[in-house]
Image 1 (cartoon, each protein chain N blue to C red):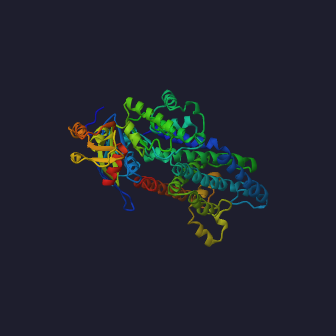
Image 2 (image 1 turned 180 degrees about the vertical axis):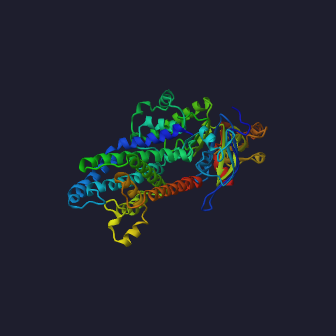
Image 3 (image 1 turned 90 degrees about the vertical axis):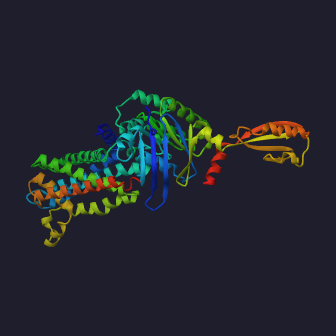
Length: 308
Length: 253
């Protein structure tokens, strides 16, 4: 279903805690149905507060938040029905079994029992053979998958994953990415917070960067990397060169151990590479090797956070 | 009304009782049996009748109340405190369930557990002392109403408590002394006049008195006053719970 303002719509949201700490400042954000939105930010930036507010676990101080067009404060029953939440902490009832835990979650959301759905979920998350195990016997990775199974047990349209792969090994992290992609294919809108930039780079359609409670950037991942990313051209010279010739002074170059590095913006139509190569040839400088290097999302993130 | 959610919480809480039968049922039944052995059979045989009732039988309602009050508090407070302590409360708070539905699930289960326990103690008592219940309907009514009221109170304690120490604070330091001094083992009329007056400030006196009236048709306090008192406590607990969920006290940021 299409929602004009997005399946999740946040307008002028502010959150001030009782002690006076301002956790969120004027947040405006629309998340479209079916997208994967990654929220990046350093510790204490406000990511979890934002998620908790959308899920109804924290009251907004001012502003509005709606899910599927319903207000999270005044129409909480409708919004909560649509949301699945996987919190950051591994919180489970140690003495329950895996099967009872997912059954409990589905029941809480008022859904009729559906053993087939729960079985599929547990199978998809490689937990089926553990269905009768007590939760205290599960490993950290299994508990994390169980949290996802619980959040999906009532078939939500919007899934919040708060640091879903924190403390998870590389293999399991890749499994999680696969699960998230499959969920998106089934039409679930996914909002995830992460510390792992590569996770956002790998999965997200759009990225929001939050720092000190302010949403400083919201952009399509590719656009963000294109707009703010810099590319570098590395030219390894065949001969020895100590000083750059004056004819190259118009270019943004650096010279280290006979390697010339040219930094250019990906936004400009004419990046100047052809001209630089021509000038090098004119100067009689032989080229041994050429490669390009793109700034990663991590570099963009660090630079934006420092600027804000 | 989200009946499925209420049922889910209720059954989840009741399952805890079946899982821990030793702790939740056997232990209070055994300790109450010991009271009957000591106060009912051993000491009771040397005591004179109270209001025309043999002492062994006289303490039956008081001992049931003692267990029902403490177990209602403990079941309900632990029921909500435990998910708060482990963090799993997020699931209940983010689910489409209203305050009333949450309370119905948790408090309903806690009250059911202590009502079952009260009836088990009644059954156990019948093995030790002979007694007759004058009004079984009112006995059951008082039992359920008390279980419900103190489960609501326990629910409030469970939300208020930040640690296990606070969880035990009110039941151990306030409720247990009030129950012992509320006429579990004696009639208020047996006290000197000044202590009789002081005892009237103890709300548990009214509960035990009303419950005993259902058993033997005699009471320390008028039955109407007992009913009014327990209704007042019930309203007080409901108001506290309404305020907690409206403000999000200790539940929401």
